[in-house]
Image (spheres, rainbow, N blue to C red):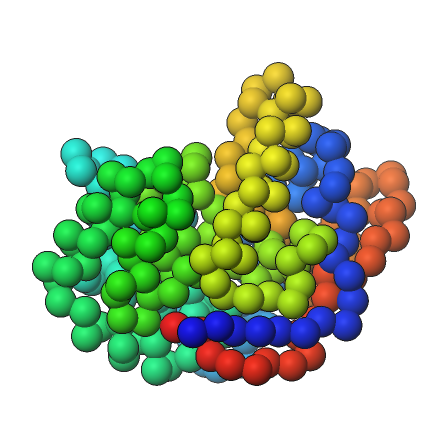
Length: 245
């Protein structure tokens, strides 16, 4: 099922930057920006839950999947990953219920097949979307957890930072367009960076961080002793036309 969003402003110019130091600074404040986002969630306990789920996804789940001889996701991990995705983005309780109706066997066999299909990302996404409540965005989150060096999570905020990706569509075609932009960015930054540390997931995290900092507290993007360059806002959600699956 397709989700379509319309936005009133253009993406920021951050994505076009080749300044490795700037990218590194933005990547480095990810946890601070996440904390700020969490602090502004009004529902009691929801902010703390977001922080805990994000740590689990970024550190524990990623390590767990990559430690397995054959990479796969368990049913419990898929359910928790969905909670993380919805806590960090737009909350849709129906998806948390629907994703649990997948059988444990199907989750494991399907995710095993998907990871084995990498680096063919298109094939891996196709494998995963047979699961209930798993569309291209959730599928990208699964693959990113197990292969952050190859895949980037299809986060709204990251996509909004890239020209040519609005209005957002949660389709395999749109994800492919997003990944091509991410891979191009990885290539050009690694050409400038002696450490060649940039991966699709790091680019995605930096884009999310820049978008959210720009939205919540632009001063977080300022460099001490320097005035922040003026950029176009990353764009605000105007209209939602359908629901994610």
